[in-house]
Length: 569
Image 1 (tube, rainbow, N blue to C red):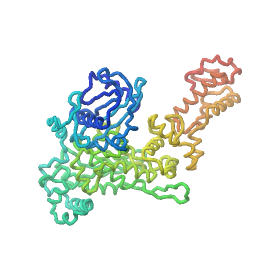
Image 2: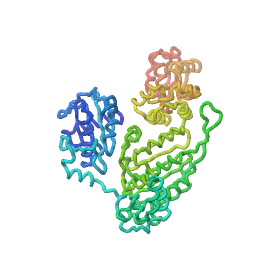
Image 3: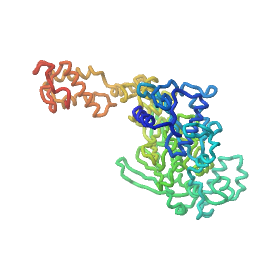
Image 4: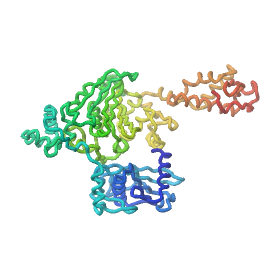
């Protein structure tokens, strides 16, 4: 959230008549242990109340809600021992449902806001103990067994529900055979035992059946194609679409159960072309496929594991000449991709825990939550753009994988700067995609001498541009100082008076910084003309709508024009 959004949020929170189970105000700071207990209590209370977030705000006085300001900085404090406070807190939360911290200036004073995610399908413990809010007080959840039961029962895991109409005969023998192989790979020390199990025993050990009854998860992963009708009204389908550069549909195919086998068939439809990149300092290009197969597989498996099957949607894979778009229905439970990447302690939340655990047993996903971070790391190693997570729709997650280099300067910079951490690379990736980053993130990049320019129109820094042999492109992106452009306008007016705005546009548009949009370039020319008129170097002898620029003294005396401040285009 940006500062304006945070300010509006805090306005709403301060408007609450009093603290509640999901809202706590503190004047300055808390000891680390007490802070962790509050995070656990707020997460559990938010779950019971159906709140999407709970909040702990430092710098606001309880009762009066007066703005006091705070010096508390969780990034500078330690938890226990030498661990940073945020990491220590994350490691102590089980399951780690996630939290974010936001520091900003509110009514002239520094405040700190903890945004806490609700518990999902079980209570959140802090180093072994779960807490809850009782009114405005914090206490142990064990004292309220009815609330603890309510959290456990808050959501039924549909994937763990037994499908009453299904039997073992509804499972595909080839899928069961592959599941055995994958399970043996995962648990190599049990290979001899697995070989001796019959199918019913194996499926029970793999946690796909309950008392030998077939679950919905078993049908998704191992069911025969026709078994999808047993899941109605839920939809078990992956759709692959091929589109051209004009977004016209060229081909498609639907894939149902068994997903364990059919994921490979989806991947086989994707045209993973070979591209050639020229690393810095060599004459020999490197040949790479557009997409890393592991990254595609991880993204697709995540769609299956996190799909909200109750919404009756499909998992989709849309292929264009330069991108893959993978979507699933259901919100992104961690809230922010940056939370997953930045916190070393993984988020242990799944929409379908029973299905997810089975997929772990078959080496389809990583239950430790590191799969998304590894996707970003693999793209970095290939010098390709980072995955794009579009979370703009509350009940849909869209992940775009790009199969082409967008900006060669950034690609070559990654080849040269192998020391950059993943957080900085993700910010640079947004810069190359012309995506918005916050002013604070801009300062981080500038402090590392990676970008320059006036925020928000950032570009790669000149030192880096020189290192990767892109000096000329850097100058085109940066442009020249204002005096250079003003001198060009004055020279044009003196030699070819009277001069229309269109003539000045033709002179300057292709010389202004390439990072500016067309509208921004026109506005820049407008400001240059205004300054020249204010200093008395040129005069508008025409109208606001149809200006005619002449040198000062050639017509109306300097300083008398009324036509220079508005609508000079």
